[in-house]
Image (tube, rainbow, N blue to C red; front, side, top):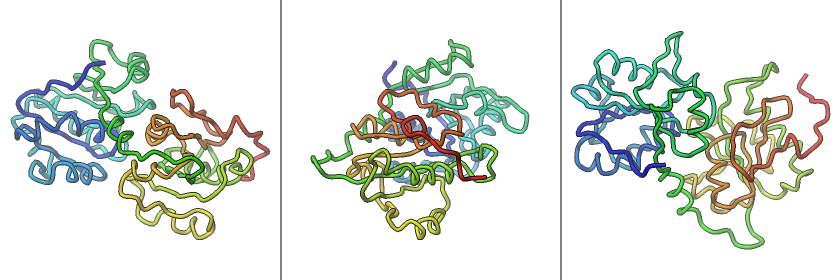
Length: 298
C-alpha cells in the first residue's frame, strides 16, 4: 500500500455516491488548497465536498470540470451515469482517468452502463482485500492501493464506549435486489433483524441511521410501527457510532468502520439472500448464527 497519490497540476473530480468521495477527500486536501482541482459533485458527494472544501472549486457540468485538466478522478457508484459519463468523456478527450473503488463488491459491473464498458486508465483501491478482488477482474498494472485516511479519521473521531453502556445502531443501505420476493432487500434485512434480534442478544434501545442516498422520510412509516426503534439524528457516522455497543447492517462501509472501532458488528442479510461479501474478520452473521425458520414473505 502506498501513502497519498501524487496528483498532477490540474485535476477534475467527479463523484456522486458518498463512498468513493469519502476516500478521495483526504487525498485532495493539498491540491484543493493550491487551486489545482475543479469538482463536478452531485448527490451525497456534493454535501461531503462542501463540508470539507466549500463551494469555490465546484462547477455544474462535466465539461466545465474537465476542460484543460490533466487527470479526471471519479467515483464508481451505480445510482447514476455521472461518473461513467466522465470516464467516457475523458477517453474521448484523451485525458487520463482514474476510478476510485470504495467497497468490495460488484467490481466489473461498476464500469458498464447501457451496454457500454468504460474502464479508466487506473483503478485505485484502499486495502489489500480490495487489491485481491480487483486483480481478478482488471489488469494488475492498472491497480494502485492508497492509504484509507477516511477510515482512520472516522475511527479517531469515535468516542470510546463506557463499560456497561451503549445501545444498538442500524446502518441502512439501499440494495439493488429483492431476491425474487417483490420487496426491496433492505426492507427484508430490516425485518429479519427485528425477528432475530432477541435470539442473539441484540436487546435494548435501537437507533436507525438512513443511508446518505436514502430519500428523506423513507423509514418514517416503518418507525411508527416499531416504537422500540428511533431515528438516529447525529450529523456524522462517527458521532452515531460513538454511543453504539453493537451495529447491524447488510454489507455497507459503516460496518467496516464499526469493526475498526471495536464494536460488535452483525450483517442482517437474511438466509435467502446471497452471503455478505465483506471480507473482514470479526463480522458476525444473523443468518448463520440463528436457525432460520421458513420465511414468512410468501
